[in-house]
Length: 145
Image 1 (cartoon, one colour):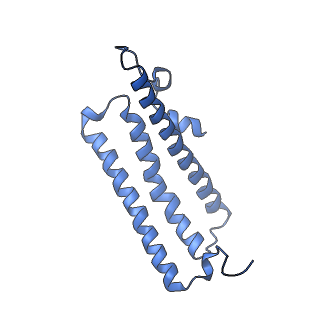
Image 2: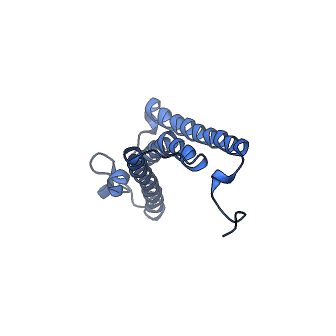
Image 3: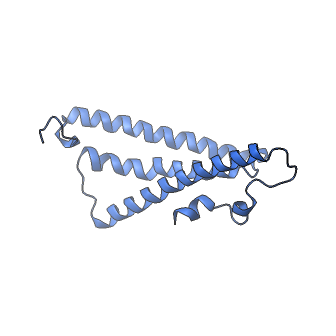
């Protein structure tokens, strides 16, 4: 395979890799900031604490940690070919897969909740996801395990 078709980022000039690392760092910061605002709004405003919004809270928590753990470890590993060692690499992979899977499951649960709220809109008093919301509201996290 020729060097022009390679996806190896270590062949890029150092200035390009530093610029990409800075931009990816900005994206990670924006992810953390945006999700921190969602978490803070949920904590501060008690009117937001109803059944459907707990899925959004779980999604914000998962995405916050993606921006805090997964992306910052991905940047030097990919752009500068840093080797983390077995322990940190295993931690990064486990946390990355767990957080991304939890995020996807929460999106699925939000979609199902919205579907139930539209399809059962005329049934008063019927809980939307009663079988999934019973307990500690950690369904998206428990599904990832």
